[in-house]
Image (cartoon, rainbow, N blue to C red; front, top):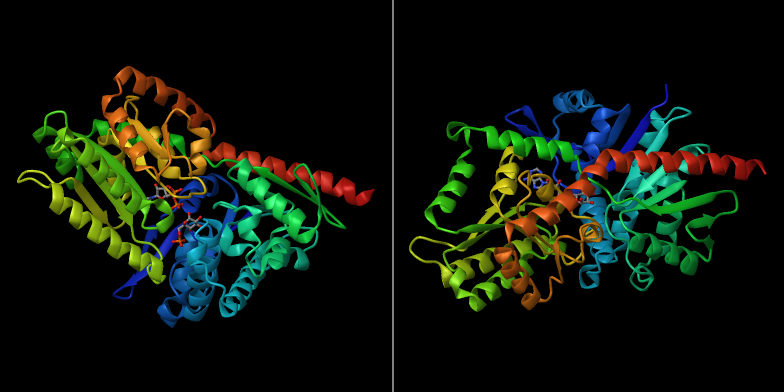
Length: 483
Ligand code: ADP
Ligand code: G6P
């Protein structure tokens, strides 16, 4: 029977070793959390990196790592620490990630990183070929594996290959600065169908293909000598039911069953009349606009002192890519900013910012989503932003206000949120005030509309739409080749 082979750099499960024992935790990040439910429900295997380098796994535990992965229908790819440095911390996260998010000042162009990128992409492609059988569908994910589609095509010309990019694709003027732009575009074009979260990313990609490679582009099709490649947008949804059910379950819990975090959140709400909490959740990443957010919050308190002691910014930042210098610098900047603002505004009984720098279990995420009447998500650039969608799905009484950056892919589908430019502190501050003062009926009206849409365009629907389009592209391909 044919199967789907999912391939992404990071597996949905992370393996670590404590005292010779393996620990398995879920991965953080939109790709893993989103795709997990598609994988769970279907007949697929998932190939990727389990989070440990080859050198970190003792000989005697190698088999065990593979068998832990196998329990979840995953295959763990072994990467050496040099490969992780050059491919993951290097080309993926010091070249492609900043460039595709328009942080050109952070973009490094090291040939050594590029060599590792090619080597590791080849390793992933070879691993796919080991598991590939005729009739299987291969689905490659994200910016770490841009060369994989063509590397598979070279070894299995007849294969059905889809590629989905989870981050923005930048405008031609930005993309053209990449020294390896031709190779990257040709790598992705090994796929039959290429998907992006938004129409803008799709157009940017097509314009790069036509202007850099000079290939014929008609509407959303690229004509190659032997094949036609289709490009389309598929905005990724969330596992709506999972978040809705978790929120409903959360409200059933008696006081005794509450987490420590929930008790602290309740304590703040009970101690301060009319208190409201503003939530932010992200990986600690410079694209997420965390520093902007804190500064905008300071601006808001400066301008609206009547909110002192009535509001708290609850900020969860999950550690990410800490071997890349910009991430370490950002961590220091955020620590300093939080310290300075807490020092500036705190009173004996109140601190304006609660800052958590760690990964929290799912139950705690739900505590945060359900306790905060406002969510403030201000990315400077973000492919989608699933946190925005998850927040709305957990508002089961329909109250709550989402303030969302127009730079997030999700903003295209979430017009009922308060959409802001994260660089405009005056606008963010005005949106916070509007959120505090918004009548409940208006909140409910906006959220019901959002919820209806998010429920319908769930992650299951996203995956089904992509798969359907891939199969159709493939059928058209076969008839193109036989003419
Ligand atoms: P990105 O993919 O850039 O990290 P998204 O907002 O699209 O940003 O996705 C982040 C995902 O990570 C969300 O699905 C969110 O629920 C999940 N997440 C965030 N924090 C945690 C955490 N502490 N533990 C587990 N999952 C988390
Ligand atoms: C984003 C990317 C994913 C990545 C995730 C977490 O969602 O699109 O590909 O897995 O961030 O980043 P990490 O570097 O920890 O895998």
